[in-house]
Image (cartoon, rainbow, N blue to C red; front, top):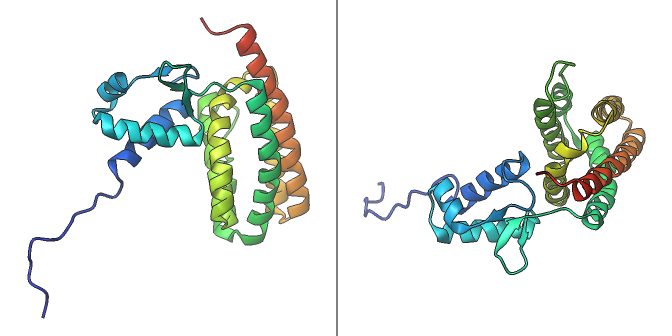
Length: 227
């Protein structure tokens, strides 16, 4: 017979409040609503999110561990600012991880996952920069899912989150958006042929070109900071 209802059942939300706050603030950083260098005060974030300072502190500690938030010279926290040195380190790590992700995708991904990856690149010349940026983000999320390797997903995801905030700026460089699109599409073509070696090499070359554009963008931001 079923156990009596003693009123002890705990209803657990799908996601803890702290995790929801992390997701909301992270997304605001990635889409540029919270720009690099912007101070993050508990008071302002509390007004924006409507959650307690305790939840905000926990969320900000998590984002600080991800590298999206950093200390601001004794003035609390701010959205992380990517220096040329940090950008170089990030892309050097990505140059090792992205080819590995391509190789694992080719080896492990199902036909359905390959179809989804292909679909993520279906846009035309009328697609706006923000839409294409989001499509690129989805492409890499699908690429990582297809690797079937949670450790790589975690490592790559952390690096990509920090790079994504800069990608919006670096793609404004003359000709970079078109060139980046071709690099990713060529990489996808190799993946579709299940050519792991060629796909990995194209991934590495894409990262190296992206690194050059990113370093140029950081230099421009330092030389001509936004008003």
